[in-house]
Image (cartoon, rainbow, N blue to C red; front, side):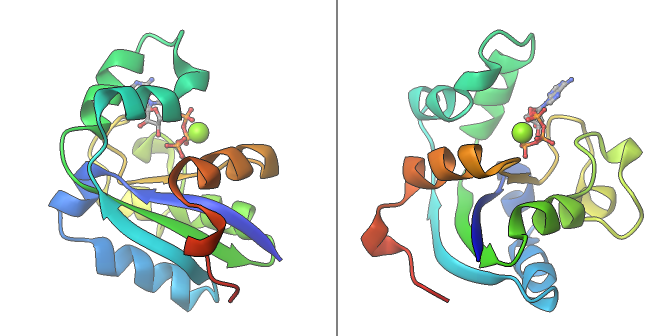
Length: 139
Ligand code: ATP
Ligand code: MG
């Protein structure tokens, strides 16, 4: 079993597609092991995206991520990191495959509805950024 962090970003929450995103996870046999809705501060967003701090879009991205509530989830399942990335689609929705979350709902390379960890090490960091062990259920 593997775990990953998923975020429904402020644009996804604003578009009212929380249920739609979760339905795609559950339909693909992915289990939700933890979930909450929060609103990030700028400092929290900068800490979460610290790996991107030198990128030209860092300031805009961290502003966007603090622009409204987000839903953070721990997903659990076999190969769930890769499975979630496949359901999400490419970062740029214009390059995303048909039937992916970003192809269906993203409107912008930055406002792309969802986040998913990209490797076991980043998943461990990202899960720990939002949840402690007591908040995560074995599924
Ligand atoms: P995420 O990390 O959110 O799951 P990702 O791994 O597909 O997405 P990254 O390269 O890690 O993409 O970029 C992190 C986020 O930064 C993207 O999801 C997007 O919101 C934003 N981003 C990435 N590239 C650009 C860009 N060229 N211009 C504006 N925003 C960008
Ligand atoms: Mg990434």
